[in-house]
Image 1 (cartoon, rainbow, N blue to C red):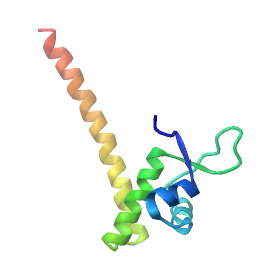
Image 2: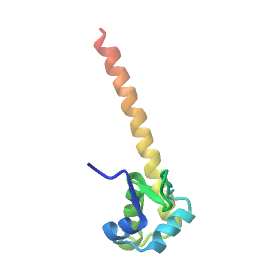
Image 3: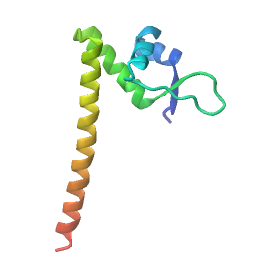
Image 4: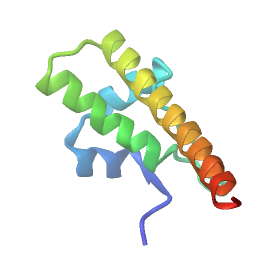
Length: 100
């Protein structure tokens, strides 16, 4: 079973990023941490971890700066949301088609 939330230390060890990048991404509001009930440490969801991983790739491998990372990740999120809407429309059309 996959973990629901990860700490900064777990992200740093798993994705091989430094704490500064995570903090900068949070400061720029590219990622958001949560504080699950009963915990004092910030935790990050799988979605936020994916953003950190993509930001690292963009910055290290493709030499994209932080504003570029922000634009790319926001565009990616918009595309994911549009895909979900498109899938819902297709599902509805198939349901209507199957009634005939």
